[in-house]
Structure formats: structure tokens, C-alpha cells
Length: 401
Image (tube, rainbow, N blue to C red):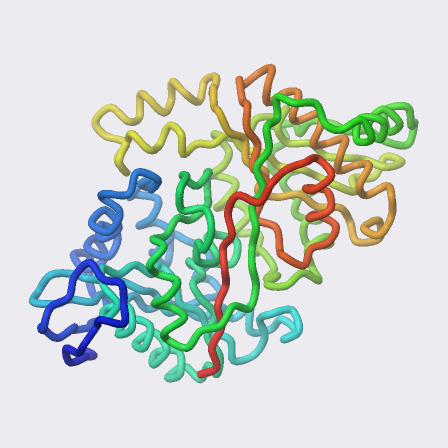
């Protein structure tokens, strides 16, 4: 248990400032874990742009034996209390697969993480971060990255731009005051993750249209829908392209077969064949684009619970979803093509075909692409070419321990 005496917190923007000391304790048992999950509802109760996650899914993500992330990772969760009332939460965790990655790609030996970070005041924030750092040091870590909750493939980064509108499906949301608190703890930005938004009701610029039409005339190119009846086979194709395309990117950590199955089971209800495309060149799958209808639009009114009426509402929506926004969470072209004109041509063709389906079949008017690394020149160029604009930035911070 870590105790931080009360101090002058005037240097922090704060919603709760008292003379009581902050007490940090590890999460132990079901009651603590429930409090850890439920605390988000206290933090964001007055934030109109927060989308409450399904509580059962959050519990599953945090529980070893349910989330295959823990097949190669370990974590400890902590709660901050003042006068018995919870004032913050944080996770500290180590991913053994991340430890094996080359340091020049952002991970590597000695790199630990913290995430699931929320706090009501600056004093609690500082105490929580310091406790997470202590835990990581005790495990031999020499560097901390955060926030990452929990895997790099889930919700990495702290929202530092775009607090004024809700996140799309599988994206995080944080209070603006967290940024100065994290930076006051000695953290510096190491990477920015961008999302782009665009009006998909508008045709793409003439140059992009010509590139798409040129590809449609080529006998070498085929852009096909995925076949949901062959879900496992299609997932394997996409994973193979993803691992090849993203393998040299900052922050890349391999996805295990168990994690693919786990994520696939969660996503299968919102996988629609016309929204996920695979590009074949001379009969070989070489690129893919995954698009998801924004489930957050239907989740927000459920307030984290499927019962008593949430199930019916969600199942009815899934029969034929109508959404404002479509999100592209993943897109990749095999490495051997990435420096070629073919890569951008395939990308524009997939984007255009999915755009048409999104409008016609789902009533969508807005698209969001991301996240995209700030130094991913190819994807940033594609986003610029279709006249999209950066609408959110998530910052990953680092600090030597």
C-alpha cells in the first residue's frame, strides 16, 4: 500500500482537492475489480462525449483466463482512495512479446507499460503513476510507456486532440486535464497516433477516381469481399498480410492465434462482407481493408449494460445496422509492394468500394480512418489524397525508470 501525504495541488487542474492523504492499494478480489471497472462511470458522468463500454467486456479484458493477452503478459491493477472514496485507477503490465521486439521499433527489452488510467485530481494521478512505475521497476523494467490499455492492439495512447466529439468503436476517450498530469510526472511524447475523418457522401477527387477506374480495367487486380462462411480462413489471410505489412512499424507486437480467435469472436457480429475487402494481385492476396460500422452509436444509450433491454436493442440493430460513421481500424499492403504505385492503387480501390457500400447499404455519411502513426508516410499520404482531416490525436508517452 502506497501513501502520498497531502500537498499543495494548485499546480494541477483538479476536481477534488482535500487535505486527506491519497492511499494506493492493489486490486484484490472481485469487489475491487468491480470498483476498478465502475470507476469510469464516476469520472465521465458529466462528459457527453464518453461512450460507456459494456462492463462484461471490460471485465473479460482484465481477467487472465478470459483474455489471451495474459498468455504472454502479466498485470497488476491499482486503486487510489482518499477518505475511503475512490479517486483513481491504473494498470501496470508487462508484455513478454513486446520485450522481444527490436528497440528501434519502440518496444524491446526493459519496456513496461501502464494504462487503464483515470483520476479525479492531480494528486491521485501522480500517486497512481508513481505506483505503476514502482511495480515495473520491481519487475526489472527500465522504461515505461503509457497509457496503453492493455495491449498495443486495444486502446493505445492518451487522447490529446479531439475531446469535443465521441470516439468511434474500439477507440479510447480521456479528459483533457490528463495531459498536463502525465507530463508533470516526467513523461515525454514518443509517438502520435492520428485518426482522420471525411465526408464519404462526396466523390473522391478526379485523380483518385481515375486511379480506381484504371485498376478496374486491369486483369491482374481483383478486389473481393470477404466470405463470412469461411471466417477462420479469411481471418488467417488478413492476419498474414497484417503481420507482413505492419512488421516494421513502431509499436508492432505479433498477434497470437489465440488473440485472433478472441478478437474475431468479439467482432464477428459487426463483420459485414461488403465492408471488408481483400485485394488480390495475379491471384495472390496482397492487401486488405477492414471497416466496422460504429457500434458506439448504439452502445452509448445502453450505459454499459445489455440487460434488461439492451440485448434486444443491439440484436435488432445488428440485423441491418444504420450508422452515421464507419471506422477503418486496419488496412495493410504486403511489404514488397509498399513503395510501389500498385500499393496506393489497391488502397484507393478498396476505399472506394467500401465507401459505396457504406452509403448505399448502411446510410453512412462519415468515415474515420485510424489510428495512423504520425510517421507512416504512405497512410498519411493516402488520407491527404482523399481529402480527410485529422480529427483526433492519441499520444503515447515514455519515461526512463
